[in-house]
Length: 134
Ligand SMILES: [Zn+2]
Image (cartoon, rainbow, N blue to C red; front, side):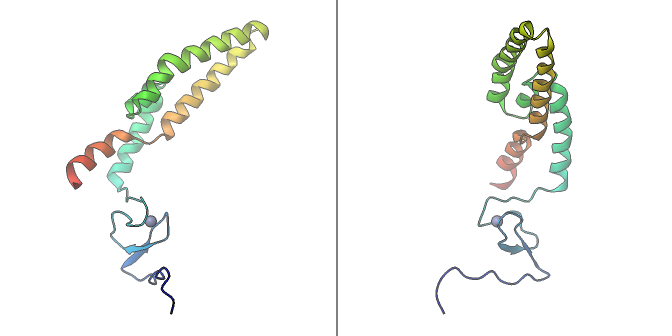
């Protein structure tokens, strides 16, 4: 026998595979000891969905949704830099395209909203991790 990496023990009733790296873990494992997979329980993901919706609503003002989710730097950049630049460019382009470039703005807007929706929610993770587990 060679001493390379030990083979994964076979899956049984009491074990599960890490969804990220496939490492065999106890069935009730909260995190993987090989990669950074962490179990997200129902309560947290439900909360995550609610905040996704709020983040999209806040993105009416592009950047607020990101700030709400804890991405303050990205949010402030969008709010005070990205959006004025996007509006300026669209207006500039609109003068050369008989106004059609104005339709670029909703695309930018939707992109920001979609990003606010899909970006990781940092706020609950910080709260719970800091207090409960360490
Ligand atoms: Zn893993």
